[in-house]
Amino acid sequence: MNDNKRMILNTGILYVKLILTTIIGLVSSRIILNALGVSDYGLYSVVGGIVTFLNVIGTTMVSVSYRYLAVELGKGEQGNANKVYNTVYAIHLALAACLILIGETLGLYYVNNILNVTDAKVADAQFVLHVSLLTTAVSVMSVPANGLIIAREKFLFTSLTEIGVAVMKLGLVVGLGYFMGNRLRAFALIMAAITLVTRVAYLVYCRRTDSSIIKWHLNKCWNDYKEVFSFACWSLFGAIAVIGKEQGAAMIINFFFGTALNAAFGLASQVNRYVITFTNSLNQAAVPQIMKSYGGGHQERSLNIVYAITRISTLILLIMVIPLLFCMDDILRIWLKEVPEYTTIFASWMLVNGFVMVLGSGFDPCIQSTGNIKNNEIGYGLINLALLPLIFILYKLGCPPYINVVVLPFLSLATRLFQICIMKKQTEFQFSVYFKKSIVPSFSTLFVAAIPLFGLRLIWGHSIMQTIGFVAIGVIWTAISIWLVGIKRNEKQILLSMVKTKLNK
Image (cartoon, rainbow, N blue to C red; front, side, top):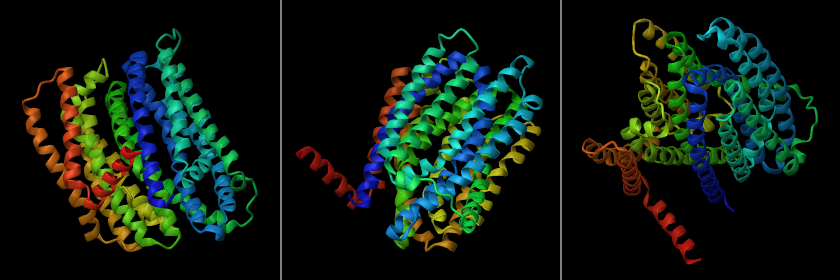
C-alpha cells in the first residue's frame, strides 16, 4: 500500500473510531453530570484538571517520541530506531518521577490553600488528586510506546483500544448512578482505571509487534540524550503554556466564580474537545507522513501534505461547527438535563477558537520535522500564556465570566501568524501557496454554507424535532457546499472512482 492510500485508510479508521467514542462520550457525560451534580462535577474539573495538566505535559511528549522515531524509520536501513526508543524511554522515566513530585507538592498546596471549595470537600479533593497522580507515572512511561505506534501508523489497534475503553467507561459510569457511597471518589477511581488500561494495552502491543525496537539497551551516548532532551524541553515549554492556559483559566474562574462556573467551563471544553478531535484525526494520520517525508529529504511533499490537511481539516470542522453554532443552546438542553449557566456561550466561542486553530493544522509537525523548534515553542507559549494575566485583569475590572473565551480566538490568530513566520524561515513554505490552497477554499465554503443556514435559522423553531431537523439540514448543506467549493476537481474524481469501485464489487 502506498503512502497516500495508507493515509486515507488510517483517516477512515480514525473517523469511525471518533464517531463511536464521541457518541459514547456524550452519553457518559450526561450520566456523570447527573450522578455527581454540578458542584462535584466542577470540583473534579478543577482538581482532576491539575493532574490532566501534568498528564498532558507528559503525553505531549508523544510528539517528541514519534518525531524522532518517524524520522529514524524514514531513514530505512540507515536508521537505528532501537537506540532512539531507549533514549526517549530513559528520559520519560525521569519525567514521570518529576511530574509526581510536582503534583504531590504544588498540586497539594493548591488544593489545601487556594482551591475555592467548602471545607467538607477538601478531603475529597485531596483524594482525587492522589488517585489521579498514581496513573500519571504509568501514562508518561508509556508515551514512547504510544509514539512508536503512531510512527508505525498502527491506527487500527489504537482505534479498537479506545472504543473498548469508551464502552468500559460507559458501563462504569452507569453503575456510578446506582452507587450509594462517595460518587466523586468512585469517579476518580474509574478515570484512573480507564487510563491505566489504555496505557498498559499500548505497552503490551509494542512488546508483541516491535520487540526488537523496544528491547532495553542503555544508550551511553550522552549527546543523544542532550539532543532529545533539548527538543523535549522546548516541546514541554509549549505544552505547559497551552495546558497551563486552559487549566489556569479554569483556576481563575474558580477563584472568581466558584465550582458552578467550572462545571459550565468543563462541559463546554468537552464539546470543543470532541469537535476538535474529529479534525485532529486527519492531522494524526498525516503527521507520520509529514515527518517521514521530511526525514527522507522530500520537503516539497511534506509541505503539500501540510496545505492539504489544513484545508481538509477546516472543511471537516465546518460540517460540525456551523450546525452547532446555530443550535448550541437547543443541543445542550437535549444533551443535558441541567445546563449550567454560561455553558452555551463558553462552548460557542471555543468552537470559533477551534476554527482559527485548525487553519494551521499541519504547522506543528512540519516545524518539528526540522528539529529546530525553540523559537516556535517560545513564541507559541508566550502568546498562549498571555491569556492568564489578561483575563485576571478583565475579571478584576468586572467583565463577565465568558470574557476569557472571547479573547481566545484573537490569541490563536496571533499564534498562527507567528508560526507562519517560523515556517517561512525554516522551510520552503510559501504564504501565497498556503493562502490559495488552504485559506481561500476554506473561507469560500464557510460563506456559502453559513449564509443560507443563518437565514433559515431565523424562521426555524426550537423544539427537539425541529432542532434535530435543522442540524441534519445544516450537515447536509455544509457537505454539499464542501463538494461544490472546497474539494478540488481531481479529488472529486478520485472519490467518485473509489465509490464506483466499491459499488461494482
